[in-house]
Length: 131
Image 1 (tube, one colour):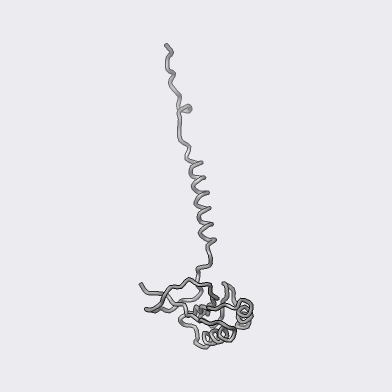
Image 2 (cartoon, rainbow, N blue to C red; image 1 turned 90 degrees about the vertical axis):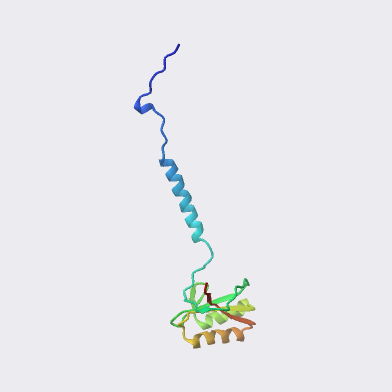
């Protein structure tokens, strides 16, 4: 009969966790990159609250009015003239105005007026809902 040989300390089986940690790190980095590739959801404005707001899913022309009266279109700063040119090119039926709650009223009215001049049928005001 064959005699079993005892394994030395260096010859014992062990589990190396370094490749496991490397793989998990790569997966987490991949998921983090996917999370930040989502459509723009950040609003540069602080919307006012409303009790009767409703959610709609429409193809809309979205413009933001910042606290100091500047406009943002698709995440980039734009002038009222730039917005009017874009309205003439795209001719949307619906425009959503997302104005900061502290934005001067005259900038919101000027934007709504520009929309109506360029064939926008519906002008909606973006609000946050209280829960």
